[in-house]
Amino acid sequence: MLVPDDIQVACDRIAGHLRTTPTMKLDEPELPGVAFLILEQTQHTGTFKAPGAFNRQLAADEAEMLDPAVGIVAASGGNSGMAHAYAARELGVPAHVFVPATAPEVKVARLRSYGAIVHLSGTEYLHPYDAAMDHARASGALVCHAYDQDEIVAGAGTIGLEILEQSTGLDTILVAVGGGGLMGGIAAAVGHRIRVIGVEPGICPTLRQALEAGAPVDISVSGVAADSLGAAKIGAIGFTQAVAHGVESPLVTDESISEGRAWMWENQRMALEHGAAAVIAAIRSGAYLAAPGERVGLLLCGANTDPASLVARA
Image (tube, rainbow, N blue to C red):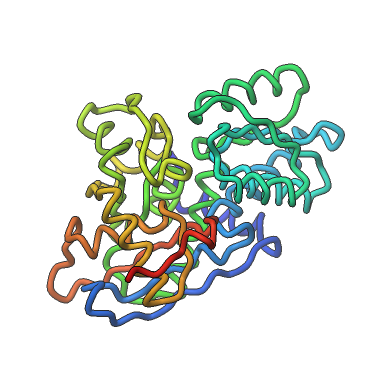
């Protein structure tokens, strides 16, 4: 199981490749209990995925597992693929990224802008994943998982170290959960000091279902946040960390996610994708109620959305 020392190794490895993402103090009546916003959507590629991508590829390069002629392969709903494509470009290796045909065009365009060779396959994450594995077997490319590899989760955990440095006095961090890599990394990094809550869309609750079953289970995938939180099963690493650190899973509706996203644009002028707005929804809808005096941080995990969809309500 990943431990804080693993997170520190990842932090040292990726130093110099990433931005230090800011936190923002907040005192907003419509977000009761929230003391900080953690602006991970300002990271390279507009998502939290970049630290894990760099950690995976740099670790493989150290181990002489990254062939510069063949490069990497990833399957993604969009965000992890962008991070891996960006890291590969920075390290000078090719990237093949397999995405569902339903992936938002804004994400596909961004993938191509980072130099990735994009392959469209099926309608759910499992379809491009199978195609990516076929490509890896045929080519020898380094497989870069979206959320369930030690290096990926440890890279995400480095965000937790930044939180400890910048956001003093936090009691609780709310993190959106899809495949569980971000939640697992944050829990591994700070779960011994700060409570971690994994917020999920009620329509695709990978963590909640796994906790109830006692193991990761397959679920159906749909909803407004499916492009970023649409894993069909939580990763084994994230699940292990959730159990070890007592991570709870409040559920939010698609309507509350959309309303939270619109509220953030109208009131904070922050462009968030639907998955990132899940933590806003949890507070605004009451799915998570902060206790008196509790200081909560909301981790905003991505901003890869169509700006045209950020329309103010009447």
